[in-house]
Every structure is written in structure tokens, then in C-alpha cells.
Image 1 (cartoon, rainbow, N blue to C red):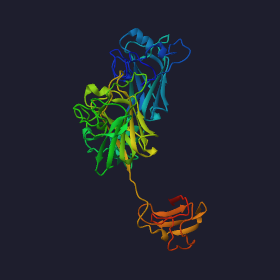
Image 2 (cartoon, rainbow, N blue to C red):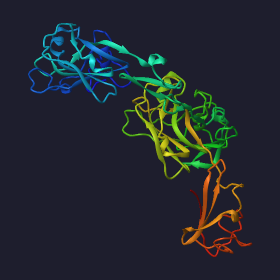
Image 3 (cartoon, rainbow, N blue to C red):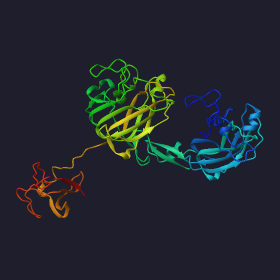
Length: 493
């Protein structure tokens, strides 16, 4: 990576034949890295009073404590090698890519030959690092010009704690990442936990056996943006009930709500059916009209809403591209996901991604969601751009939701005792009216339950006992009678 635009950069989608990218500085080949020109490398010439700042950063999967490094000048044109090679450079190490420690530097190297390699020392006692920054401050020529490096080689000691399971304590379902002299552990996609003591499998919805997109029922009685919806009743053990899919845009080869699916229809129900999206399978979603590419001036607003029969805390979501190498450019490069309790009104953004390009056929990419925002039963995926520069149809092969199902537990127990078995308590009042409580020792929500009301209740006998016709607020009967308009509350302490 670099902080400066480089020569010949064609686009984010391809590499030009005469491109000199940052990766070329570390590939052991003659053609290396060149900045675009003087506007991108100011103050680098020997005659300039200031200093330039052309950074090349290498991130390595292992940790390295390097004692020296070799810089090689370009090997194609001697006059450019003599003028563009780094005369002054600082070298830094980091374990996170943000906090840097200087490991070495050199200056005054103004004489470079064609393809010449020079080796400089570094301080290996400063430790192991995974990020290495080479900061070119001056070039060898007199005037400001492009900075060029053919190759940079690090020489030192390599440490890879993650390569040997005996050297780290990551969970079996976690990924180990080297971080200097230590490592970090992160649970893999589909799991949650600290990565060390546990990585528990997350629940996936919709379940994989919910049925292909064309087995869902078209329903014109429930619409979204005047477009009919589709639903599927699921009776399995995980989040059972009715799933409903909504979208705000017409889809490819769409037929009416009272008509069978067409041979090559791409309905929104195909987004959540767990099947690979391909032609003539009715599994996967493609818009009926072209949508913005990455070069467009504004985003699209293509919504795919999944309404679930259970409350669900979203931790991660996996997006699979459609099948077919030529159609991968239709996959979303920019998308957000939001949660709601009623599929309308207030939505809470749970996650998003951008810049996801260069998909391959049927590729799946997993993204994090903010699980701390709570449980929802409506999830809106808004696709905003496809993964090529020009506009085209937008496709979503499949989306899986990973998280935890919230189970509704009743807190009105048949074994808690009748209302007259609760204790009247004048020491705790509500709107000046005494409360009643019951201590419960069952397995679900044990502790003290307290009932209260803002009005007196029928036939209240006294603080100490219940009358034969008394109807206290804790009574299980639905025929409580009050002395007027009432508000009653139950709490657990």
C-alpha cells in the first residue's frame, strides 16, 4: 500500500501493462514502484528545501525482526535510475498499522546505477513487527520528480506463532493472527466468542431447508412500494413460523402475483433460500432495470427485506454472489443492513460494506453486524452499487443471517400462587397505594415479583389480610374490578 498515486494506475478493476504499483516493490522483479509525477512527490528533489513523504507499506502474515534491508533501483533506464532512486529514507515497524517505531534510516545516497542494490542496517532489537513502512523523503536527482524503487528486500528473523497450534491458544473455530511478538484470536465466520476460551456456533436463518425461491407463495394482499410480497411457512425447530420477503423494485422476468414463476425469474425470495443462484433456477435475485456502478454519481436504493417469525440478534451476514464468471460484476459492491420491529417506520443500521469488487462466481463474503443494538424481526438489506464502473443489472445470489434467536419466556407462572397468597406491603407504594409481592424460587426468572396499581381495588380488606371477594392486582383472574380508570404494573426485583 502507498499514500501516493502510482504510475499507470488504470482502475480498481485491472492492472495496466505499464503500471508500477506498490506491490511491484516487493515482488523481486526488475519493474518496481513509481509515483505518478512531481505533483505527487513534492519536495523530493535535492534542491528542494523541504522533504517529501512517499510511503510504501508492507503487511506480512508473519512477524519479522529485520536487521537489514536492501533497496534496488530501477533497471530499465539509467538516467531515471540516477534521478528517481531514494536518496533519503526512513524505515518503521508496527504491529497494528497505526503506531510506528523507527527501525532505521539512511540519507545522502545520491549516486545510483542501473539496477543497483544497496543494503542498509536496521535495529532488530526493537522487536517483531507485521507492518513495515518505507518513507522516501528525498530522491537522488536535483529536481522534484517521481520516486522509484525496483525492489525492497527485508533480511532478518521470522516468527510465526500461528503456524504451530502449540504456540498459541486460539479456539479450534478461531483464526490466529500474528501481532509482533504475540498473536490475536478471532472466531471464524458463523461463530461468536472471545476466540480463546470459546467460539460458539451461531444460528443461521432462514434455515437451509426452507425451500427454493419458487416454492414461496406470492401474496398480493401484502405489498411493499406497491409490489406484492412472498412468504414461506416453516415448521422446523429453528425460528419456525412465517417468513416474508419484500422489495421495492421489480425483478428480472417478473410475473404477476396470481401467475406461476417464469422459467428464468429471479424473485427476491431467492435471496434467502440457501441455494446457489443460477439461470432458470428461480434462486437468487436480479433487478429488472440497470443499477448504478461504482463510477455513478449517486447510489441505488434496492431493498430486500426479510421479515422473520422470531426476534433475532444479528451478529454477521454472508452475501453470496450469483453463479457465472461473466455475471459477477452484478454483485453488490456497496450495501447496508438495518433492523426494525415492524418492517416500517424506524430502522436501525446494523452494518454496511463498500468497495467489495472483483467477485468470482458463487463467492461468499461475510460481514460483521453490531449485535449490541438488540433483537429485531425485520432486516432490510439495501444494495447501492454493483461491482463494476458502468451501470448494469444488480444481482444478489444469497444472504444468510448469523446470530441468536431470542426466546419469549412467559413470566406469569401457574405455580407462583394465587393473588391472595401474595404479601401486601404498605412500605412500598405506587401513586400512594400499597403494593403486593411474591418471592418465587422457580428456574425461570426467580426472585421477588411485585404488583402495583394507581387505584384501590375491589373489596380491599386491610393491610394484613384478604377479604373473601377481594380482587388484588396480583390475582390470576381476568375479572378484576377497580374503583375507576386504572393502571397496573408488575415488576421483578
